[in-house]
Image 1: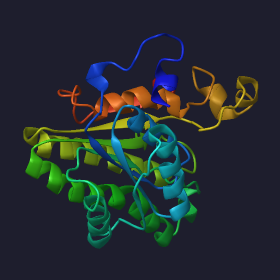
Image 2 (image 1 turned 90 degrees about the horizontal axis):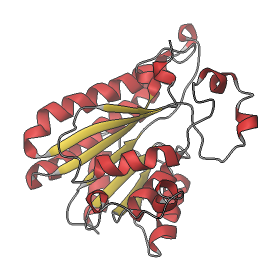
Image 3 (image 1 turned 135 degrees about the vertical axis):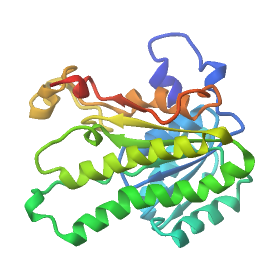
Image 4 (image 1 turned 90 degrees about the vertical axis):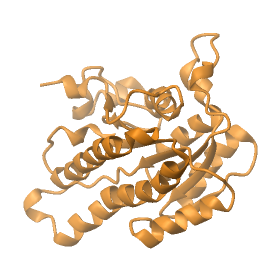
Length: 265
C-alpha cells in the first residue's frame, strides 16, 4: 500500500500534489515480482490501473495487488507486445474500459546472465525483444494517445546496470542502457506536447522482506553501501511523483534508487 510504504513512520497523508485521482495508468511488466506492489502504489495514489504482462499469472498478480487496494475489479491484458500488432492489441484492450492514457509504466527488466562469449543470437534477440522492443512499441502506441491529448507521463523501470558493468551481464546491461536511451529520446521528442518521460533505476532488490542478517551474507549486498537490498517500498514514492502532474519539469532523467551502488567505485 502506498501510504503504508511512504508514511508508515508518521501521521502524514499523501500530498495532494502527488495524487493520481482521475488518472489512468497502463503498467506493463515482463514478469518481475516487484511490479504488483508498484502498481498497487499507483492505485493507492488514485490511479485506475490496467495490468499488462506476457503471461496470465503475472497479469493476475498485478490485478490482485491493485484490487486489494481498490476493492474493485482491475482489467488487464496478457500476451506479447513487442510488435506493432501486439502493442495495438494492448491499447485496444485498454480502450475498451478507459477513455485516455495518462500514465505508462514500462517495467521490462527480464534478467539474463551468461558469459558474453557464450550468448547465442537467439538469446540476444529474445532479451532485446522483451526489454527494449516491448518498451519502444508500447511507448509508441500509448504515445499516439498522449500526443493527441497533449499530456502524458511515461516512467521506465530500469536496472542500475544501464550504467554499470558486471561480469556475465553484458546482454542484460545492453538492454537497460537502450531503455535509458529511449527514455531520453522520447523526452526530447515529446516534451513540447506536455509528455514527461523519466526512468527509475533499481539496484539489487527483492519484493520479499528478508532479514538484514540474511541479506548481508550475499556478496552483492556487501558491495552496496547501505548493506541491504532494495524493496518496492523504496521505489514507490518516486514512481508516484514521476507519474503525477506535479512532475512537470523533470524529463529525460534516470533516478537511481539503489542504496548508493552507482556511487560505489
